Image (cartoon, rainbow, N blue to C red):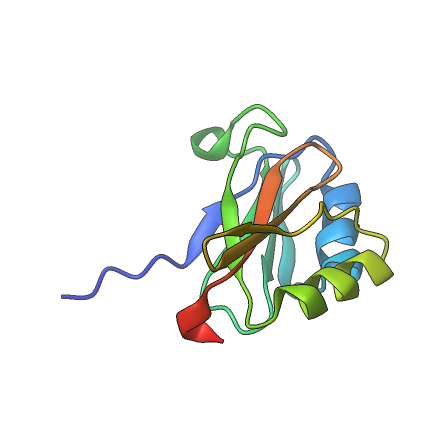
Length: 125
């Protein structure tokens, strides 16, 4: 039996600001932005090439977390230098490349402080 990780909640304070950041600056594809009730909103976005999406939500008690509390989500890329340059060119503040014995990392945060890591694995290059 497969157990597929396909959706990760990202806790944010301002959905419109976060949607703009992930879609326009980081380059995630907008899958949907729905408001099924007066106080409920769900925005789902998918990183390019990924089978796993993120969800920004308000009004859903089961997804409630403090904004900015997510740490260490990894986006695996084929070429960290190119990925870093692309994000920096879109206005994302990406940290310097760290080489940990052939596995390379660079970090960035969304406007709420959720921490992401770009990772290049030698076997996937």
